[in-house]
Structure formats: structure tokens, C-alpha cells
Image: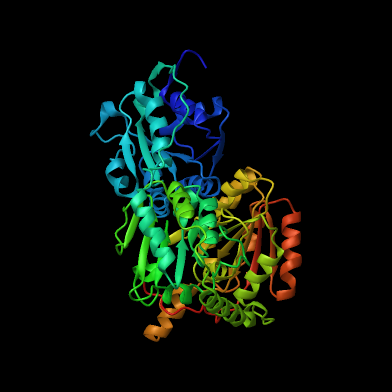
Length: 542
């Protein structure tokens, strides 16, 4: 590169210096300068078939690596096609930098191609949304966007660039500053001591930990706290794997008892949303005291008796020291171990079912027993992925990726390709409902072109199960809840250049998985599942 560059080259330089290695995109004339700049900087360009997938892949990269995922999309529909991914990233605190093209500033308001005010559209979906107004600010603004995405409560940032600004040139920056991230304020010592006192006094304490632990790089501090104070723990979201299966303080199946009978609940990096009934009974015990540890009070929720906001890693470290050597509660832990064992026993019948069509729980069980310990498993679907969420256990965090509370279907192929690009030496397996598969099936073309060997297992029951079963139960009928029976999704992937196979019996699952991974190709195992199998849930209307 010469002593000057256009805005695309300057932005690409900022990305490179921030450690960005991959750019997810779909070609459009409004963003040519950033594509050329990325190529010059040695940033690998992954071009997808739909802008939604570009943005989801950036989020998937963030979820697996805890780096800022970056995507670039063209103006107008390129940006609007990315809106669902931005909303999902905001909901899950995923650090994403989305760069959009924009109609030329010199002709703004005259009706240029794909002219629209993107910032007004995406402002509520992002931490920050702005338009780059001068080429001289391109480098520093891009660096600031990445810093903002990774700081405090992590999340998506959007910047669009008018095409005339994109092609304008400016001098290269002299600065090569290291990207510094703000993790939040240090914990208040008084709040730490009050929380430690509540832990020491509690008879039935419990911890629920979520994605805030993962994004804050605080998993070791959480383990130190729960082990030092003998705190039974459940997790959700990106915290899965913080405690491995079989850990004496990990109670994934006894969550109902742990939270529903606790007299003290530590809420660590978890939004008190619909998944935990907003922190109210019957999920949380009536009268239980709360200690809330999070980056900030961004989300409205039940107030804590003690709230510790700021640097989650530092807060957990300080609380671990303050509450160390708290005596164990043998009766409480024994009660939870009994509940855990009973819950697991109740699942045995469905996880070992030999019926055909295949029970989705049996399929999930076969997948988890086949996958290597460090495999990354991605979920994309409704009822089928609910079974996976119940049954999939991981030894470390970062090995389970799903849409999170926003629940946007079609994110799976993009998440999976990003995971495989980030961790090429690991198995990456996508668990997809047949409904979800239809959203982004053409991304198997992307995976074939870029040689990204992800294996997808489709649970094909021919219905929108998450809607059909509740509609029939509550309304006595179902409307618009059926798909084509036994559709050959495996042949779709074969036609795109991948590996495909139809699976119809339980004893065929493992050999098919072996063949799919051995193929070295993007693969689809189309597994015919029982449409009458319902995920056991107490409520579906959230």
C-alpha cells in the first residue's frame, strides 16, 4: 500500500491491526473499496449467498472466539437483510461490527440507487450506529467501532459509508496503537462484602450463570467462587461448559429444584427474561434473596438485594476471595443430587428409544455420544433444538452455539461455517430442524465453494413442531404448521456439491455420522424423525 489509501483501505487496515482475520460479505458495488482493502491486507473474504448469513457468520465468529466478528454488506437491502442478525447479536451481547454501503453523500435525497437512512433503521438493534462522513476519520472510526463492540456490555456496532466517501483517499495513519478494551468499573468493596455475607448466611444458595460470564472471560473466576463457597450451579446460553458434566456442583437437570427452593440466588451475567420467568415464581423461589453480578443494569429485571455492576471478571474474583471457605451444605446438595439423578433417569426412555420414525431425543443422544470432546455443536431450530438444549453437554464453554433468546431461525449454517473457520481442527456439527434448514440451505453452496466441511444433521419430522403441537393442544387445531413429509434435504446438499445421506432407523445414525465426517465435504444427514414426539415443556407461550 502507498502512503495514502481510500476509505476502504483505511478501514481494512484498522481491521487488520485489530486482529481481524475474516470478513463475511456478499458482493455489492457500494462496498467494493472494503473488499479490495481486505484482499490487500490478507483478510480472508468469505462471500455468502444472503446478507443475513454474512452478519450471522460474523456473530458466530464472535461467539466461538470472543473476538469481534466483522461483516460488510451493500446498501439498502443489504443492510435490511442483516437486521435480524443485528437484533440477535444485541439480544445475546455478541460483539459484531457490520459495515454497510450507502448512497453517495453528494446526491443524498435525490433518489440514488438503494438510498435509505440505515442508521435510523438499525439504531435500536445496536450499541452504536453511525455514518462515516469523512475519509480522514475512516481508520480511527473503524478502530473505535471494534473497541466499542468489545467493551463493557459487548454487542453489535454498525457503520455505513457513502460510496463517494468510500472511494475518497487520505494519508495512512501514523498511529499503530494497540486495541484497548474497557471491561467496566472495578467492583465496589462494600457490595462484595454484602454479597459474601449473604452467601455465608444462606442455607440453600444457588447460582445461575449466563453469557455475561463468557463475554467477560470470567469462567475461571466463576469456578473458583462456586467451588470455594460450595454453590450449586446451573447455566444457560454461552455459559454452557463452564462447569463440565459430572462436576459435583453442576445441576443442569435439577435447575427447577435449585432455583425454585433456594433462599439465595446469585444471578451472574444472566438476563432475567422469559427463560427464567423474569426471576419470578415458580422458577425463582418466592422470597429468595438475589445477588446480581453483571456488566450493567441495561436490562430491566427484578432488583437484586445486592447488585454488583462493572467488570464481571474482577467482581467474581473479588467475591471468590471474600466468600472462600464457606462451609458446605450437605443436606441441600444431597437434595439436588437426588433431583438431578431423577431427572436424568426420566430421560432414559426417550434417549434410548428404538422406534421408527426416530425419536429426536434418541438422535441427539447418538450425536452427543459420537462427537469428540472438543467438538463445536450448533443448534438451529425449534422443538428439535429444544431436545438438544436439554441433552447436549459440553466439557468447556464455547462448544455450544445457538440463537439465544431472540431465536432467529436460519442462523445455523452461518454460525457453523464461522466456527469451522475459527477452529479448523475440530469437528463442527450443526443440528437443524427441517423448518430451520429451509431458511439458509443455499449456504451449503458457500461451504462447498470455500471448502468448509461442516456436518449438518436435519431432524426431519415434516412439521413446525414448536407451533403445531401447542396449537393442537391449546386450540384443538393447527394452521400453517405442516411441511412436506420426508423432503430430501440430503439431495439438495448433494446437488450443491456436498455429501448427503438419508437416515431412517436408529442403528443407521452413527455409521452415517462416520461417513459424513470422513467425506471431508459439507454434509447433510437427513434423519426422518417422529412427528408425534413432543418436547416436554410446561409452557410455550412466552
